[in-house]
Amino acid sequence: MTNRVFNFGAGPAMLPEPVMQRAQDEFLDYRGIGASVIEISHRSREFMDIIEAADALLRELAAIPDNYRILHVHGGAQMQFSAIPMNLIARNPARKAVYAVSGNFANLAAKEAMRYGEIDTSCNSAESNFDHIPEFDARTVDTESSYVHITSNNTIYGTRWHAFPDTGEIPLVADMTSELLSRELNIGKFGVIFASLQKNLGPSGLALVIVREDLLGYALPETPGLLNYRTCADKQSLANTINTFAVYMMKLVLEWLRDEGGVKVIERRNAEKAAILYDVVDGSDFYLGTANAPDRSHMNVTFNLAENNLLEAFLREAEANGLYALKGHRSVGGARASIYNAMPVEGCRALADFMRQFERSHA
Ligand SMILES: Cc1ncc(COP(=O)(O)O)c(C=O)c1O
Image (cartoon, rainbow, N blue to C red; front, top):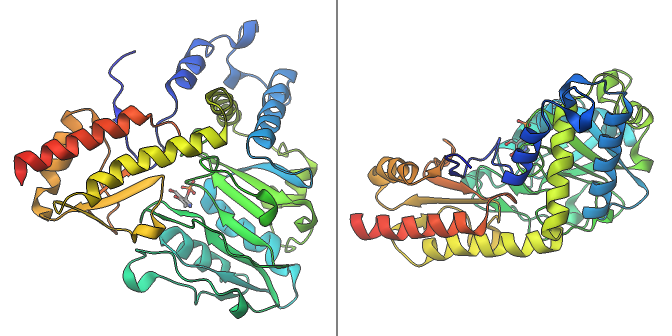
């Protein structure tokens, strides 16, 4: 192929090369119909086959039980920050919810929810700039809470919930934008899981929502029709014109994941990839990990250079070596290697080699 780099961007992120190639190959003429997949009706048989196949594959790969519905909703994950309270906060007339604030996106989600009810944000790691997952004590959860919300992987800070809180009868809602399908999950532990596509699943702009059926039907009357989970479920996510291209790309990504061996295999590979990078960080005083070691993410590896004034040279030389988009988020600084499912082990090895070589020449 052409000059493809190892792309460590946090999202929109790299997609598997075979997926990109397949999309390119069939772009002008989808399966002999003489039109592109983006030029055909979202209600055509061809597109219905795509969305149904995507849902079936997702159900199989993520082991989604029959009592959960799969929804495709406009607006990415942040639109879900509004949709979640609108659909769930009225489960209990007290209109309360708990948000574990483990990062910037968790904070945004909590702020949005405050428009609709009383939100408890006492489980919070803002004081140490979100360098760890806050301690969650289920005993402190008000029993009138309609749900508990967590962000399972904190893209900016490089932390993740390695184990999930047990919230008993209160539904656990998880923003899994930066890690869905990167690790095996017991979906039955969650009331709702949502994720935008642009990390592990496809292009940006759509969100996937996996919702337990008994949670449908609690939407506030003012909920916009297109954000109402009941409507989305009843209309099979086709209440209006869906982003057909994103769904098509997601189907290709899911087929790729199946062919790679599925989530169990990719989870092992992701652990191996993360270990390659954390080993370099831990084995040197030149690099400093920014996340608390037991909470480290396998998707976003965040680190700084002990000599912060070398950061610019580090990023520049990395890019010259085909290691793209390593700049950390402004709220953490330093560097961040986002290593979602599509990042091959070789990409992590190349970055680790570069880091060692950069240290040798600048220490
Ligand atoms: C954990 C998490 N939640 C939410 C979002 C926001 O996603 P979107 O831009 O698709 O709304 C992001 C984006 O990076 C994210 O990492």
